[in-house]
Figure 1 (cartoon, rainbow, N blue to C red):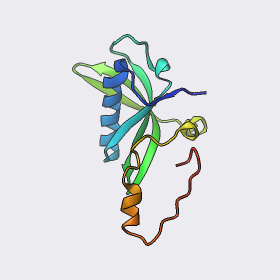
Figure 2: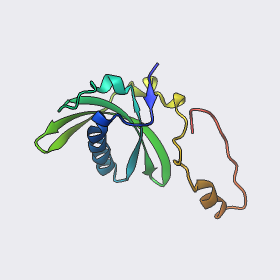
Figure 3: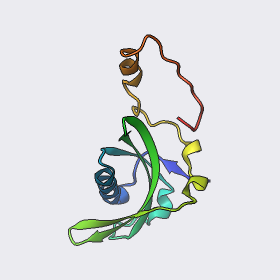
Amino acid sequence: MPQIEESIPIHLAEASEAARAWFSSEQGADFKVTGIVDPVAAGSSDVGPGPHQLQLILCGERDGHDVCLRERFVVATRGEGYAVEHLVDANDSLASPAPLLDPPVGARAGWVDEVMGRHAFVVLLFYRGFW
C-alpha cells in the first residue's frame, strides 16, 4: 500500500517545487503540491543531485474545476536548475492512491460560499476517495 505524506521531505523540496513549476507551466494553471506518495522510495535522505523519481499530489484549477492529480516525474539537477521529465503510464489509474486520499486542508476553502452565492440551493454529495 502506498504511503502518502502531506509534507515534502526537506531533501526533496527543491525537486518537488521544480516539478510543480514545470507541470503548472505545461498545464497553463497554477498547481500546488499537497502531498507526496512514497517519499522514502523517491530518494535517500541525503541531499544530492538525484535524479529523484517523485509521485506528487498536485491540486489546482483546470478548465474551471478544482482538480487534484497524482503525477509522476523524474527530476535531476542540471547546472543551476532542474531537468524535469513527466512520466505517463497508461496503467497509472489502476495503481492510483487517489481513493486513499482525503482532500487537503484548504483545497476547497471558500467553495461553498462562492457556489451558494450563485444558486438558490446546492446539493453536496460526499463519497470518500472520489472528491
